Image 1 (tube, rainbow, N blue to C red):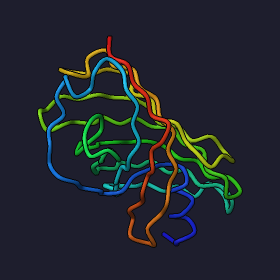
Image 2: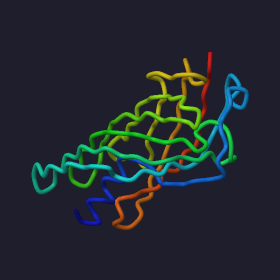
Image 3: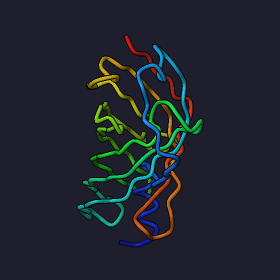
Length: 167
């Protein structure tokens, strides 16, 4: 797969393996609401690229990685990610949608959806499908932007404007 194609795929989905000091997130650390920013690191576990036409690609992928919170603690600090999704690239413009389950060091999980709209420089991530333990009932939204790392199959996702609430 060429570097240009990889860059387009990266423009539709996010992550980087970015590890910090290992620390568990406690329910008390989260509070009932909060804000966050950080990085996610994902690499492709598998990708199926279908060339529909010269200017039209369809990609189904599975991705895995880890995240850190910019503050060094709190929501998404040192959590493992398992994601899947589809990306369609028409005339160089990507559109994508998929799902992620994120697991912390205690084994608690939260699941949600990501999407990237064609022609925009940023994407949305919503954690609102389900959660266990300290994440039960959590609702969260953040924006993310992608930076591809050469032709390695890895890419950085920079999170911002993240906010969550827990009932």
